[in-house]
Image (cartoon, rainbow, N blue to C red; front, side, top):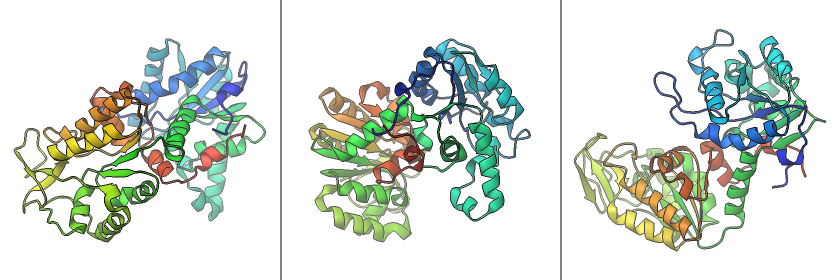
Length: 412
């Protein structure tokens, strides 16, 4: 980590603007279904408050329609403020907007050791204006800059602790720190941890180094698979992308999800990877994705009318054995439709194998998204080395992409 950390600063009496990722899942009634991303930000939050900083938190949530103040109220961050109060036992000032008089008043009212949460950044369209679009449109650039300046003017210090959005050029992630040149711009503890685990894992792994890549589409993961084939000793493939690989080697896949336009890509990856790229030897298939559905196990081709929905028991045992032999393991993407029984077996077998490998001294990194949800459902989040808060961000990091939102932070 070559960037300055919040631990390098004395924040007493300073207004600290901290970008967090509180984009948490909610149920149909808007209640928080999983507060893990909030809990993961607490070490940095508590450090700032205990140090006498005046903390201003900002985040996005969901994909609201409309602009503030008429924006879709379902996506308000008010429930997040209430959960924060429950988690650290302190009152949280909630601002009804993230810029303008409401935000300015909330920030100005703070005393040392106090915290406020700004309303959803995405209630303003300027938050998501891409730099490429802004560079070619003066009005868009003006709107993005004005929005960012409104946020930047609230504080003396900028903290990025939102790894999950570091791959985006959103105003709060990139334009705000650009507007705060001359003021401290540092990483929070969660961002530090993400970069440390993912960076060390990819650049200096203890071998054997194993990657497990699952999910629906080869198109989503083809770049990371190719990158990992150049770094890993083995890359195990699971999830629906298996069926595109099966077609690439000439096997029938029944009604399984196949990306017809990615069959040649899968064939090329199989050719590049050779024996290093490991496909399942058996799969579980059924007529429909239904709780308690009747299923069959197939080795090789899948009959017409059936769809592959999980890796088979033989493959799960084989993958577990390979996991037990590795010293560094990265997992991104489930092995099947783990949300629905009986198609959860492969994913949870892998999760338990990773926990066991960790107990035996391996470094295990879970790459966010569905993998993080699966390890949480299995009750094993505390039994692996690190669970990333970033799905898309962790994928892009593993592809070797650089993040402008990290590069803009102050160097040590």
